[in-house]
Length: 170
Image (cartoon, rainbow, N blue to C red; front, side, top):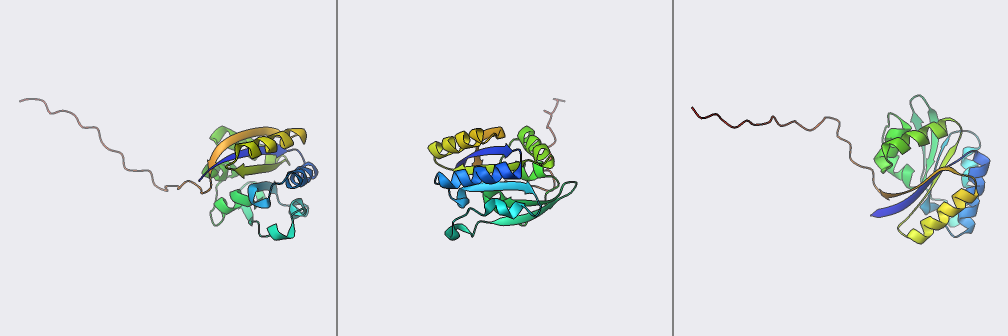
């Protein structure tokens, strides 16, 4: 199923926690919210404002070489669950984020930012989320069409076909 997703990077965990509280107050459920942050003692507190009926949101610890442990929740966590990624940008590419932006998100998170995304098939909802992110001081705010399952990776490149040349008349 195609979703419209709004990706944003919030400069600190405190700002990200407030943005998530604002999203929940505006009627967004945890099933619609994804989070990606460097793991620390504070990271799980980002989801504390969750209503009890939504505590089943997927949370996956992810260890990325060169970055260390991350906390990942929501649809992004579900897509990355059970996979091993070479880099955070690689994992975001699998989720449908374009390469240049995936690299920008990775660098922002490496610098202490927190990625918060909202996913919905409803364009009005994603427009509201975008406005909330901008009001919260988010950077790298981008609306994309994504899919709910990661793209399939091929470990070996497909075989190349040799070009055929027309035979010369004898």
